[in-house]
Length: 327
Image: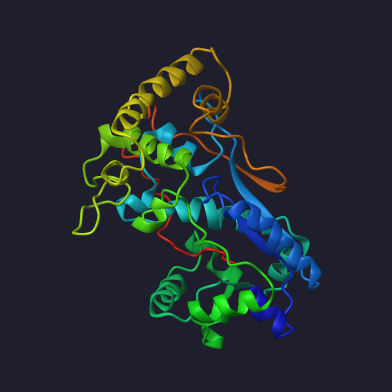
C-alpha cells in the first residue's frame, strides 16, 4: 500500500506499526528495511507503538500478548472465536498514541476525522475483512467518530499478486505475512517454517492454558480433516520437535505458577519476560535490537485473583475487531 501511495503522490502523515511482541522473527528486520525505504522517498519513518500495562496487582509485570496469555493461563482470544487480542494490542495503542499527537488532536478539535489507511487487498477475503471493519469501526464504539477508513488497495483493484509485483518493482524484498507466530490464522506450512524457539513457545502456550480449556482444543480451535485443533499435536506429528522435548516443555507451567507465587510473596521481583529469558533461553532469546518503540501506557490489572484457577481468560470488555495497520 505504501508503494502505491508513493507512486500516486499520496504522502502519509504518520505510519504506525503496533508491536504485540510476538511477531514472526522476519518481521522485525523488515521494519528497518521498510522504514529506510520510507525515508528515502520522503515518507515519515515507521513509528512502532506498543501496549504497556501499568498495574499488575501482585503478579509479575508482562509486556507482550504472549506474556499476557501465560500470566492468565489462557490462549489469545482469537482461539475462542473473538478478536479482542487485536483490539487490545493492535488498535488501542495506535489510538492512544494519536491522542498525544498534536496534528490528530487539532483535527478532532476542529470536528474532523483522521483518515486511516488499511492495507486490505482486493481479494474476496480481504473485502470481507474491510466490510467487517466498517461495521465495527474502532476498538470502542465511542471512538467511532475519530476515524475515516480508506482501503487504497481495494480502490486500486490490487490483489495479493499485484501487491507482490509492486513491492518488487520498488526494489524491496517481499515481506512475510505480519501476524503472531501462534495466531489461529497460521497455516500448517507457515508453522513448519517457524524457528525451534517459536515452536517451543507454542507448546508452552497450549500447555499453560490446557487445564482451563473447555470450548476449544488449542490454538487452532477445533480439529479438521487437514489439521488438529492443537498446534502441539501438529508439531509432534510433523517431527518439528521431539516427543521428549514436548513433554519437557509441558512441565514448564508448574515453574511459571511457582514464579507467580514467589513474586506475590515478595521474592524474585522481576518481570515475567526476564524470568522466561533467564530460565528458558532456548525458548526466549534476547529481544530484537535496533527497534525504537513509542510505548503507550494503560491502566491494567489481571482478570482474576489467581490466573490458573479462575475466570475464562477472555477480555470480554473489548469489542470484536480485526482492523490492523498493515504495510
